[in-house]
Image (tube, helix red, strand yellow):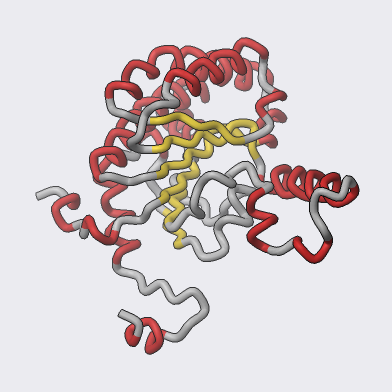
Length: 249
């Protein structure tokens, strides 16, 4: 029996975010180069995207490449960019077949021109899809995003487009790269690390965190179902007491 059968569909998280960690360590454990792990990590992406779409998840954000990752060995960065471009080209037909819309957040202007071009083509080609919103965080970090939002708000304040007393949490959220998406309800990190590594810091104020020792190349649908079941077992209080939550049910 699959764990999927135990999931309560009416209580699915609307938005799941995943820190896809462990590709390099998985490869080293196999006696292979780190890029071997990234290559096998693509299979996990396909499997989890398919699983999320089958369940009816509305938003899935994958932390694929951070701004800090630019500091990795050059051969690994170049290999990752080539893998990204190749994967995007191959996956667009599948995304369209499964009604999945692609979005990208991050400082993509740091990426090679050909990678930026392929991303824009894929985003345009899937723009009419109405199923799962697949959000790829590429060249992304939350501190970068927050600083960029602050700069834009400051510029709009100086130009008179907004007044100081208009700045609140709702307005600030509109300047983030995730303005079009709801905050994640569940964040999953693979490979045994217990931190969120500069990922969606502002958006995860009330996100449920789930950590697993499974390396990303080994993470499959059953692992996703297990994380969702764990999420559904929790009481989400948002600062209120458990008694208040029960009264409002």
